[in-house]
Amino acid sequence: MQSSEKPSFARFGSQANFASEKPAAAPSMVRPATSDKPVASKARTSKAFDLIITGVLMLLCFGVPVFFTGLTFQGIAFEKQIFFYFCLLAGLVAWVSKGVMTGEMKIRRTPLDIPVILFWLFSIVATVFSVDRWHSFWGFFGDPSRGFISITALVLAYFFIMSHFTERRRNLMLGSFLAAGVFVVIWSFLVVMKLRFLPASWEAMAPLSLIGSMSTLTLFLALLVPLFVTALFLIHREGSQVTRTSRLALTGVLGVVLLLDLFLLLALYPFVTWAVVLAGLGFFLIYILAQIVRPVESLTWMPMVIFVVVLAFLMIGTNQLVRATLPVEVTPNMKLSWQIMKESLSANFLTGSGLATYGYDFSLFRPQEFNGNSLYTLRFYQGTGLVAEAVSTIGVIGTVLMLVVWFSFLSIGLYLLTMDKAKNKIASLGLWSVAVMLFVAGFISPINATMLIVGVLLSALALATLLQESGSEERHWELSFRATPKFALALAFVFMVVSAGVAFIFVFMGKVFMADVSAGAAARMPASVDGSIPKYVKAIQLYPQEGRYYTRIAQEYMAIANTEGGKSADDRDVNRIAFSVREAVASGLRAKELMPNDVLATEALGLVYENASIFATDALPKAEEMYMRA
Image (cartoon, rainbow, N blue to C red; front, side, top):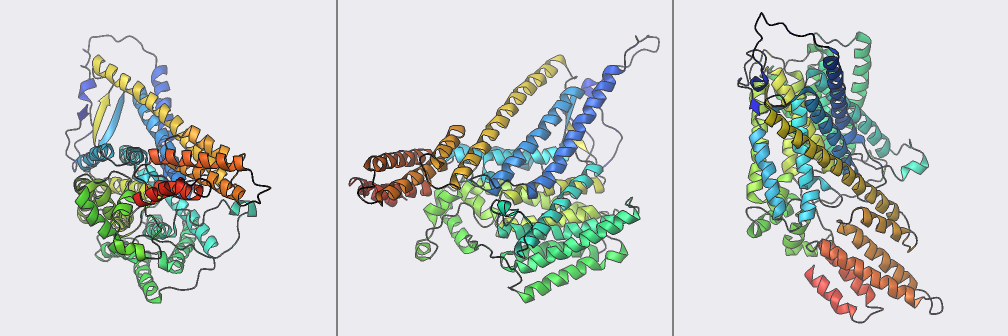
């Protein structure tokens, strides 16, 4: 393994892999004739892998915001997470395969390498010492974005984007993300204005928000504002290769969608974290007013007008523009989140309770006065802001390492964006305005799987774009199969192991997804021994590690028992009741074994015992025991 010796902000010519360099042949030596066919074949194969990598990068930027099936039990965040895993795995396979084909593999070195790797290594420690190791490893039910697998995938996505960045790929990724943004804006506008655009059979499967919740939807819409403006700047900048007809068409589309985006932010006023919007737009405007970034003069007015319009939105406040009935979203406020954080530090100061275990911390450390609230039955499995959540789940060490990554990233961006005004960094300004929004949101706004993935993708793209527009020299770690026979053999062995691991992960994630599709189908059916129960059993057979499926089966069996018990004495089947109660208790106990520190699993088992006390007198003390434990 080697790294380039060139400094990051200078250019001294092309790189060379000295380990694989061979001595020059003597002038008098006659080389035998060789065929060019193997070289041409390798070049074509390498180009094919490059096309796959480009396609994966575009698919990630377009697919993550818009992908959904509506078929799963866990919901849209789970679907997007699985989609992200499959796309990333395809890209990594293409990257490694290209390296094997060409004989070398380059990994770009970045200023964040050490902080990112240290945080990833600590996440292993947090997983090992977790109160729920499996869910810390895989991620919690419904939104697995906080698990170790998700963190590993996000780290790999960061290096994948940085190592394959080119200006052309940047334009394709940004264009793909903006296309997804246009789709989300139009979809959201039609939904909130209650304009039917889907067949009746599809409406039940379609989500209200393509991003997950309404709060995360408004965060996504806020990110789009500086990106749409940046796209207009890039289209109209001097030297743009966009034809006049295309420029007019794109300007019209982006202008209309930008207006719809602003309208949605006003219409969804109660769900918007306005501090995030003002921080990003203010950052964008400051660099333009200071003339550090200089867009075409005919469009300089646009960011100023947008900023004033947003201030006007704050004066207007809550309104009645929305026609659709929007869901009531409840998240822990900042005061409650900080109370949970302080109490959890007293129990697990250094390493926290483990990745993806905020639900455990909330249930254990929520203040007593919360029980007097009308929402006392709610369990929050994610905090408001990643920082408050991190303190509870990964402790002081993990939170400090995470903040080191964040502040290092932000300081690099501010430094490179401010220096060398001669380089007009238009694309970087838009992307870094998004990065500032995400930075602020990390402290005060709910972040789900969609926004976490989108945030990492856009942040990596922002850093790569800024390094390119600043003229920074690229440095790489180079893995060469041609260095020495022993090193080549070791790399080949690693490649085989990784290939086997990727194949296993593909199959495992496919089984997890199909299990949840089966559970989703069962959830849409009435409780029945012959209907819904077999589908839940199928889900367990495919993915036996998930305790929520057992909890659901227990609830289904108890519903069947109660339905049968409510019949008249002549119609009641006592054997059916006894069987349903036994199965409900067995499933509830299995769920409790898989998730011993999960309050919902404990409460569900207590509820099963309470309902079973109608048919079995010894069940009531057990119900009391479960409730006391919860």
